[in-house]
Length: 57
Length: 514
Image (cartoon, rainbow over all chains, first blue to last red; front, side, top):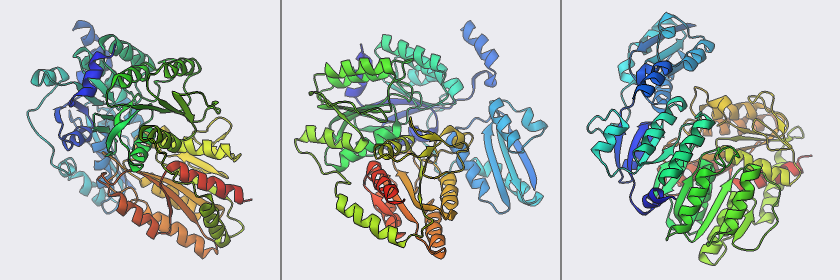
């Protein structure tokens, strides 16, 4: 049931950080590979437009 | 008073970074108030309540950054607003590689990725978490304000894919020795822990470390996971994983009271566990001790002591076992107090510590006021104003809306210590200090002058202010626990090795303050 989660517990995390940069930086200091996503609000933060985009994709 | 604001179009920065920017701007001469926020509707409303208005602010969108300043005169305000690029420069150089714009791009970059760490505003966090799960990633979701129905749907999807969602509102996890969120640096060892509360996990793991054992895995599940609506989806997944984890010999679970139906299922699951289980449900009625493998305890400290006892075969001493010493200390401090001094005031950074302290007071028949009251306690009408014995969670939403959490910045806690210290009826101030990754670099240093001032003012009134504290952390944490402890003891603070120990001391104090 939790196959991929168990796999994570047996291995070294390889992380993708989205949001507060410090959370990713603290993983880097522990020797973890982190990919930092330079995130910005999709559709300029317009939720109505975002909903329409999600329906299209 | 003069106000001014600048809007930077299409300039998204994370909330923690922006709080630091606001703090640095606020430290400049002549500046009274600052607010640095993304231009969401909620934030614009907040700015308007703070007295920042204008066409530029009302026209900003969620992708735009607003920097607002209030100062004594035009020169001070313009002086700060003229240096915006300087404020927005990171204090510490960032790890910069290839610029990645989306989660999908990151997965393409490294298909070995197995974990997404997400701390976006709640309204966007669900969408990115769903994408992470669809790409086969486990999720550590720090964000709060994620709708409950989104949490339920994410966790259902994760379960179908064999993944886990740690969160939303997840402060801490430790995966294979790697600390996520606010985790502390602790020894690795045979004890696994599952819990919805970040500070609960921090206290448990640091105490296990201090008692000479270590942590295999710590799985944060999010504050709502054990509600009947979410029904423990991540808790049960974590349980299954820890039961199978070869390094985990003992499983601990620490939590506020789970939902009624979820508790029944959880007790059944714990009873079936092939490994010994220590369970601590803060605030619930006392559960009768049952046969192994489940051991029920009352506090985070007892949970750590019991887990270490089972794992190593020898039970460590409680940090507050020496009651004679405590009685002597209380007697000595009481003698120095004036007759007006009658009340305990707890000012907490950790919500779980506030909750646990209430339980400890309640177990001794001492009722308190709180902004987050345990069943049977009274709700403070205004969280900013204490009454009689009060235990206040300064990490509650009321205090953190648009302002930094006290684990990151102690400004509000410092002000509250000053306020309580001025109150001639206050006998004891109870504090918690939380170290770890991403926490304030100097939590004690940020408030110690307020502690000293409070003690001096009480002495001038002919009394004595007792200050009691606990520090959650280890010698591996970057804040230097020894220095933090020394600052407290040099200021005359009674420092306890656990939050439960500090709370028990204060309860005994309260029982003597008649």
